[in-house]
Amino acid sequence: MRGGQPVMGAATLARTPSPAGLRALRVGLFAVAGLPAMMLAVGLVQGELGVNPVETLLDTTGIWALRFLLATLAVTPIRWLTGAVWVVRLRRQVGLWAFFYASCHFAVFAVFDHGLALAPMIEDIAKRPFILVGMSGLLLMLPLALTSTRGWIRRLGKRWRQLHWLVYPGAVLGLVHFFWLIRANRWTEPLIYAALLAVFLGWRAWRRRGVALRDG
Amino acid sequence: EPLGELPASEFSTDTPANTYEEITTYNNFYEFGSGKEDPMRLAPGRLEHRPWTVTVSGEAENTGEFGFDDFMRGLTVEERIYRLRCVEAWSMVIPWAGVPLAEVIRRARPTSRAKYVKFYTGYDPQVFPAQAARGMGFLASIDWPYTEGLRMDEAMNPLTLLATGLYGKEMPSQNGAPIRLVVPWKYGFKSIKSVVRIHFQETEPEATWNQLAPHEYGFYANVNPNVDHPRWSQARERRIGEFFKQDTLMFNGYQEEVAHLYAGMDLSKHY
Image (tube, rainbow over all chains, first blue to last red; front, side):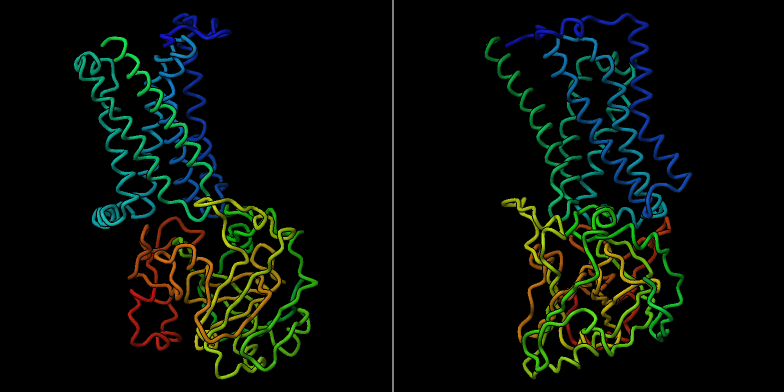
């Protein structure tokens, strides 16, 4: 076990930035993470999202939801590998971006595929397992987004951690949803994400086992 | 190259057609990659119109190899504005230029044993780069060449077209130059592109998507809003150029011309 010891060359990374530095990092993260959404909005207004703009909106928001979800799961391993404890303080924003893109993804589906008509939408969700799976992933993320405030973290105490364990099944469902709509041989991207998720989950399981062995 | 003044057809729809740009920048042509923009990026310059040979073979009297111009000699190319419904639930309206397949079949004089027609896309990894990729197991690529098939009465239906152009011009490479099938009441994947062989046979031909995922893509592949794809609904479609979906019509709106072909068939079984 390398409990939080920085690997070589990561010493500067491990140093916690000043409050001002951290604030700048948060603003920078906000600008970068919001860029795909911004580009979609501009593209939509200027008619530059290709000949099937709804498909572009759906695909792009969905893919970024998954990427940010994987990024939140990468935070803890990064902290352990680099000793940069402060990265945890960016995690909430990354998670909220994942929720934002997943919500946009659902909104595009609800508005353009169904014109917000509830009954056909529910029928569609119930009938098509891949939509149901994606929808479940989003529903799992909802309480996480709602309880991401400082107040809720304090109020829930130990249970906050237990609740936020839901991010794992959420990520798995999101990935299954992605795999499910692949046609023919376009497996590269979902396989990369699956490999990343497997590494993140596997690393946690391995670490837990290590902790249990040491403590037990 | 412009094809000149083309006679209009009574089979043309008066629904406004999609733009040339829409029709030529959003294509499924997996021989060039699985992305919609791959064909427009990779096909022009690789897939040339000449020389091109079409082979007519199998259960017919007038078989042989024909240079493209010989193959087209004596046939009158007309304009047919058809709806196209992709199995992925999007659609377009396309002003094709082409000849009825029935005329080509009559000229081939099929024998009484010819119950089906099988079509082949060209195979040449130099021309179609994705044909060079192999892959293994569930990562295996499509088993090239792409093939498709029609029952003889479907092939002889006056709607069925061998298209050599669109918008009054030669067929763009990304749309299946120089000659492709157009079967407007079936999902787009039946309308095989860049045809090099037309083969008459007695048994139902192997069709690429049908073989790849038989539970998702049937041999008939008739547009049918009542039979869903296992993973998505076929009840509605998004017309390219529009944001909201519209209802999908039985046989893509061509039921008057083709419904009789399937009388007595259970279309949920023969999807």
